Image (cartoon, rainbow, N blue to C red; front, side):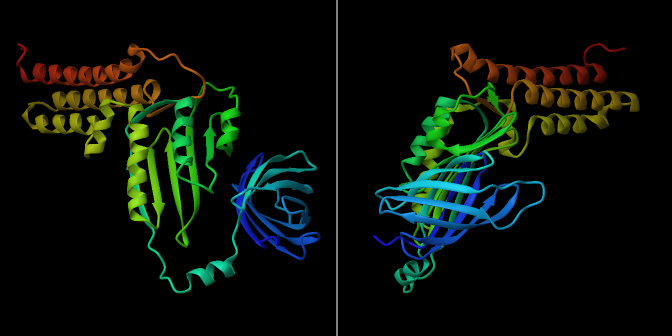
Length: 343
């Protein structure tokens, strides 16, 4: 079979990023150019030579440019052609870097002929923000596998940020043994061509936000897939008092608002300063306690024993902290108002 001349794909391993491969010549004597956009580095251009025997692609490459502060060695890559017409394989360089990659055929002339009479599809996007999350590695794998089942050609990429950042395909993530007990951020991403555009799913859990985003030309698929993802993730959401923010106001805003309402009723500047100072201090204390002991995303990379107490304790502590701060603020206000027998 004649090999397609245009390919796009993903690279994982010691280097990660997107690739675009242009080939020319006969299958037994291929020449071409590989452009590799490495995350955080830039675009490296390789001059490629290789062969294709009908099932296996073998290429070697020499870097044609250098980026200051980074080294790029002679490239060797071998990949097998699967039934869907994709190449899945391994790469390595003579300076020790290595990893895996996947390539998808991207024959633009065929795509243009097939879609010349069709109008450009609209791209739809849907997003859902989750509350606080506590999730373990096995549960992340279950969610990732469910999402991967929706994509026939696009491989799901997992990015884990702990003391270092690792990016790999889902099968490799399943095999990894992490030295860290917890991750700061975890991200799932997958995309594939659809309707002349592409459809994609992004899920990210981290200290600032937990969200899922779907995108594609089919509105029903975008909304339906997002609902499925919500059903996968919601069992791992935790009920913290900070979740009130999703309704437009959080605990800190509520307690400060209450203090401002009652400030004019106090007779002295000292009393007003005392009430406002204590309320601000309590709000900061509650926020810091949540950030340190009740993180917005608690991501376990190792097995964790789950008990009824471990499930309810974080939520219970969160609401007790908030209720205690509200009670202390109320008691102080009552004392300053003279409702508790203040002289």
